[in-house]
Each structure stands twice: as C-alpha cells, then as structure tokens.
Length: 445
Image (tube, rainbow, N blue to C red; front, top):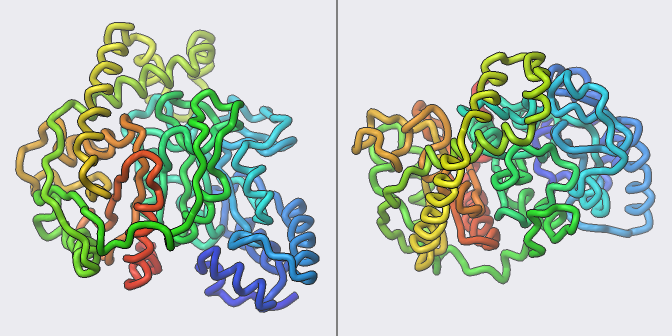
C-alpha cells in the first residue's frame, strides 16, 4: 500500500480525482486511508463504517482507470452521508435509539446517483437526533460538518431544515450549498419538515459542491416535492462576476466583527461586480419559519408523541418542543403559510433585478447592528438570521463560503440566488476561492 501523505485528507474532491488519474495512489489505497482515519478518529462522528463495500467499489474504479475510462471529477473519491439518509440493508437510525433497528431496502436517491459517478460511499456520519426536530434553535455542532472539517471525509450530504446543517458548516469554515427546494430528491431521507427539508452538500470548495450537485440533482417521482428540474454545472456558460449585480444591506457589513464579510465583498467588487444597496423586507421571517417548522416536524413524528416514545429522546427539551408543536392550531399554521406567501413574493421581487444577494450566515452581533432586533434584523435569535429564514421559506438556493479568519463571529458569507440559479452562486464563490485561500484555512481546534 502506498503511503498517503497527510495533506491528502484536506484536499478537495477534484484534487483527489486528479491524483488518482495521475496514479499517485490507487482508489483502493485512498478508500482504505479514509476508512482507517474515520474509524480511528471518527467516534462519535462515525455512525457506520462501510469500508468493505467502499473497497469493492474502489477496486472497480481502479479497473476503470486502468482501462482509461474516466467518469468525472468524483470518480474514486470517498464521501459520507448523514445517518439521516438510507443505505440499503444498513441501519438508518436518524440519530436516535428509537430507530436503532430501522433498515431500508433501498438507497436514498442521492446515494444511488453518486454511485453512478464512481464516487465511493465510505461511511455514515452520526445524525442529529431526529434531525433536531423539536429543537427550534439550531446549534453549531453537526457530526457531518465535523467529519469534513477534520479531514475524515472530502465531502458529506445530509438533511437541512432551519439551519441544522448550515450553521455548523459555517462554523466549521466549509463551503455549503442548499439547492433550490425540489431540485434534489429527498427519497430515502429522514422527514422533518416536508415544505422546508432539502438535501445539502458540505465540501471544501465551491467547485466540489458544483460537481456533487450536478450528480444528485434531477426529478424523482418518489419525492412529492420534486420540481422535476435538472442542474448542469457549467460555469463557462454562466454570467461572469464582472457582469453581476449583487445586493447587500450596508448595516450587515459594519463593525469590527464584519471585517471578514467585507473582505469577501471586496473580492467581488474588485472583479467588477456592481454592488447595489438593498433593504430587506420588513416581514416576520423568523416567527413564520419557526411556526411552520414546529407544526410540520411535530406532525411528522405525531405517532411517537402520542405513544410517549419521544420521552426516550436524549434531549428532553426536544421532546417538549415536539409536544408543544402539537398544540399549534390550524389557524396559526395557516396564518404562517399566508405570511410565507408574502415573504416569497417579497424575496422574489427583491432579487428580480439582481443576480445575487449577500448576507451574514447568522449568529450576528446584534449589539453592533442598528435597529435593535426587528423582524428582519440579523441576530434576532440565537440561530438563523432573518434573511436566512426568508430564503428558507422562499425555497431559494443558498451557498455559504468562508471569508478570512477573524476574531468576530461573522466569518462566512451567505449568497442567495433566484430559484434554480445555482450556477450564479457557484460562479461567485469559485471566483472568490480561486483568488484567495480562505476556504483552506482550518477552524480553531
């Protein structure tokens, strides 16, 4: 077995694929190295090692490469999925002892699609218990994000709703993309909130995110929320950054903690992008999102609540949150849905003349922002900022990319695009990352 140098564990998927083609090492050697690293350093990040199956897939890839057959930038590169996504014949616990014996007969749609590219599923990472349902204030910890940040896996996929993955990915200085609602099939994914759930991608670069999204996007009749749309990662045909109009709210870029955000904005401005000052709509983004998420997640797990099984959750506060969601009335849910339609219209109107909106990811310094915490002011609660909740409710695609390391809390920039305009997000992020090394800077230990 060839020695795998330590820097390989922090390389991008594209770089790893290029090294496989150059025969710096074999796919079997690479899969074994990542599997051993996950098993030795992973717990409690690791939910399930799939090293035997990964080695079989890797041998197939080596035979293909030996014959000169290449299948794209993900071929031969290991990856992981959250335990919120099914792998046929293997336990899919949704992060809870309640479902410790749950086994599905079919793979999640994204697992099958990545398999067709020659990507190698090496492990399942631990999921947040029931995807955090009932815990309406997401934290900054996610085993899937930690696995990528720690060099245990080049990229990972999981179920995102309400910031459960977005905030941890941001805190871990990863590049993260949450596609347009309905673009990626949720078949085989843990249900949390049927109108908010999306499959998200965490990786080391925008380029990696683009290749993974290209592989997993597309219609699926097995997912009632599928839009039937497809996605092709092709930045060469996308509008260059120099021609983009990018909207930003000046208040979010003021104060010492916002210096990393200003640095990202400066890169886009130096490329020739036109920066346009905007004002976020004054609507109750946060309360509408919380009501919908609470009602839908409680309805999803209604049987567990009725049977009292939720008392077996490790977080008793989460159980209480799920019970509280059952107390919401139909009037409250429908009122939130009506406000959601207003938010969708307002967000679409705001972004219509623009290519992108840029914003802080969340957990902003409330005291440093004017306005004192109104309905659309970042930092209103300890979770997603208001405009992130707005993008969630509108189903718009979101990409998070890290800025330069700094002492402030706002080190990651969030880009929002029109529906099904993921290439605009990826173009701006790839431009930034091709001119800086910020996405290669590791988070504090």
